[in-house]
Image (cartoon, rainbow over the protein chains, first blue to last red):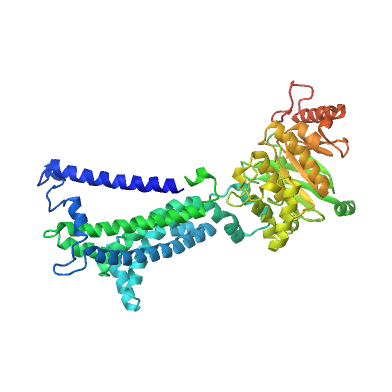
Length: 284
Length: 280
């Protein structure tokens, strides 16, 4: 297990270095002002303003956020990220509860599946940018603390993959196993908890992985449109200074990427625990 | 009906005038079973044999009350089939062991006991007994997928017998096993059921298997499914590998095979057995 973990960590570092090398390589060969292909600006600009050097981005982490302060910017980025991470976690948790609950209700009442599923799918086409101010308005009316706004928008994106995966997974139980539960005179709910839900876990895990990163996106986007101070807010304010301090934006990007990795890692850890006794090929 | 009533008191299973039609009244109506009468005594080992589509599995599922007959009645242990299912009066095993892969062997065996509301200590004690019975005492904490097919099937049988049901319903439980394992499992099943005095209804399409295991072999024919003959197999209660060499064993195999040919409606024709029935 340890050697596998070490190998994974090693591969991660190698992949990161490859991306950095690719970035620097493009800066060498790419045109300074970009180029147009058939009238479209397809080739990105390689200027230091558009694409700062990777080492400048890393260096920037240790310079202060605003000129004249002592604390390096990474302290601020970690602070913003920690907030966003917690919001995404709450979002994933709420989305998980709501998504699994919705899937169970839809599996229990087939009529509801036909009635609800189109709305569930339609909900995901509503742009978050449009929804965030509505949530902020409702939250403001009800006097809810601001963090509940962003967390619920994270949940809004997270519940969908979980609901879809769980609904599919609840159909995993083989007919013979269902017949067996029937022969024990087990009702629908007992069959759900003893058979259908455990059988659904391998299908639910990929949905949860999608949901983990979707929750981060939901929180970041809703921070931008509600002004709650997390890494999304930081990205926006740093981005506004991109002309004078292009590397600063990337410190926020590092923060957001780290949150995404942490959330994903959390689901992988849950998967390892939930699937530890399953046949190996099912966990692959 | 009074003769029926006295019979139902002593019989483990009484099937009385049962018909089963799928899609009744529609153009694609299938008469799976027509006018079935069958009574099975306590302690009997009865096999249902016949070619594919003869309704043997359907008959088993009717006894298990997993489906309701179109007409007729099924009594199990003197109660309606529905009541027997609700009381969990029988255990069931299928061709696929159907073990829950997320539960250990022990937890799989305990499943019916959990559903009966037994407490933990009582469940553990019974699971120990059952593991001993199927000779898997060292495998209680293994996961099902770590066991061979034959061992998984023994776990499934232990699960079916865990609550000491008076009746065991089995649908081709050894169908997926190789010949060696299969013969071994047949001997094991006889040993286990003799020890627990269990009545067994056993669906198979193997003639030697039916003859080796049963007191009575119920021969069925398809389109529509009905019972054509019941062959009594008086090989005694002590059966072992020598039984398979016995003249009477071969005689009974021939008798069942001929009954199956008759069931196909072509007596004296064809070199092999009835279609869909194996000679192994």
